[in-house]
Image (cartoon, rainbow, N blue to C red):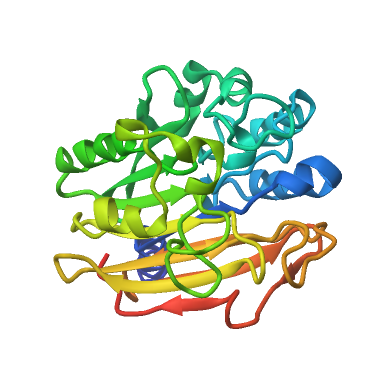
Length: 324
């Protein structure tokens, strides 16, 4: 009986360990700009909840527009929240149009990210973000983290608003040097709320901001251009996350790259003035689960502040037959 008991315990523990190794979860933190500006208690609640669940999540992605006005006061709030995760849950930040500019209230008129880099110093940031590379050198404007999950190496890129041609070249170079890694892209502006890439005559294109006037290596790229220059040509990019867009604030697009591999692309934004969250104090975030055993990527939308899941189909869904 004793031997049988220990065998059963061994099988149970082995099963738990195997199950844990077959999947991982991470958080996508949509635009926090109006939370940081008007509802800091909701923002802090989001980060406190993630910290309490630190054993559950492998990392956190912030899609950008961390602040509303790119002010010292708002960056201090943002820093206070994200610092709760230091040495507990790695976080990777994409900088949005509201996180750069020549002065308060000037959104991406210039690519000035001085405050973001002051409040998240490069050496401090890379020590807790799993970053293996940043661009430009010495800044956090674009960063690449590496993770070892479900028996697979992953690269996670968080890219600036309107990634420049030279930024795309940097990303392509790193991916080329890691041909067997799965890749996740996180950038502020990529998808539109009609389930298409942001391009053409869509609103809020990077080209319509001050930074959009630059040319050559400094020229910005919208969602359609990022797909053609970066996502489509790389066989191992599996997911793309973005925010920025209002209206419904959500979208999803599944498409094949040049190699016939499927890319899962998602938009999520729950700031003030997005349909359904007009007050902006709901505090919704996204929980992504990648399951190698079932070949699925599942997406849930949850508010720690409301302790409520947003279960409409556009907010809770599962991709099946995923090659992980």
